[in-house]
Length: 417
Image (cartoon, rainbow, N blue to C red; front, side, top):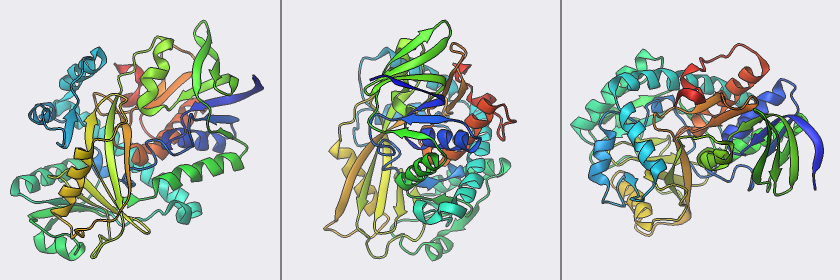
């Protein structure tokens, strides 16, 4: 049946980005409705590594990334894999990706991402004052481990770039690294430690946002899938969903990797490719890591949790394909074994995969779209959805309520493509 009530803002997408947008809008007193085709928080926000890391403020389109991917193309268990398929959208995305793989764009992207992610840390600190236990928010920093001299040199270069943008860390030699994190075994040359970084339980973060939205009078509708748009002129008047028609004032699309599919009938070309990532949650082992560890050469992250350890990694450009590639799961476990004392009879709690929404320039799309007067896009956060979630929601709320943005929105404007 049709829904007669009309919200000031309709948010499509119940992941960390959508719920953060809704939360900060309700904070300004707005009337908000949020819909998601599944259960809120159980999409890509569910199973990621749970890291809140401004040190990750580097775009996927780094100089040399695509040429390295070319070497990995025929290895389905490689850290970065492009699934061969005939797709004009993928070809167009890759051509743009190549164009952005320059040193000049690297500096531009790091400036934008470091600013947005550092603002997120501040907002997480504020949220944690009221909901630390629920979100399992811990600010223990993050540790990058390098097993070779070349890897360590790469880590030093990133450390220096980040320092110029206000993200501070320190270099560790092998002894200092093992003292900080005794669980690391195997070949270690050195590392970098970013003390101001954090971790949280991603599902709990989204559910905390959802609870606070409802406490402020917002409406959260799980199991509500967008089917079609009702448009007049340059405005979207409403959306048809699996639970009826919703009239809208302003609409915010936070559909992650599904955003291109959702906007196709609006005549938009949103350059986002699904980047499939995997996580393997295992029972704690001895010794388990005390802080999140990222092993760059193996391209894996190891995150300690309340009653388990999560191994995460790999990126597979495979469109909206959500099938599980067992070889990639095994590659994550194999990589973790090189640096941690995983038991031979590994006790796996859960294997998960999710589609990260990847843009060709490595920057999210945040802001109003030129073609539609009342459409705002908040999508394309690549591997940084949790890190950038609160800052994105805050920025969207600033833009839509006429307040001065805390972060420069220009680098993220959707019309830049």
